[in-house]
Image (cartoon, helix red, strand yellow):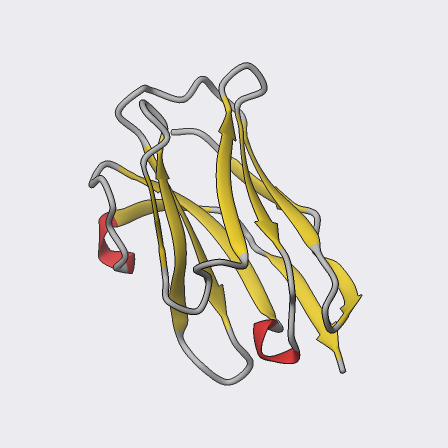
Length: 123
């Protein structure tokens, strides 16, 4: 199975933006669904967004709607999470994962996970 590598995390001030990338070591099948999750300090992992590789159908958590955008680069084998208007509550380790259930927001539907990238938003 493909290895997933997240990148793009870092330290940003409140109100700022970051672009996270999820790179794949092998070709992505058209049926693949890619999810973004995050683990807030001291909490479990929560859903952020998901995108279907085939047609770009995307779904967002309420906390991400209007601020985050998930997109894919078919040629580059990469999925992006553009995050705007960041606030300290967005501080977390962000993970990408692959699955096969379109629009899925629960971890159980994703089987292959990256190692995560830290995003820290200062006030």
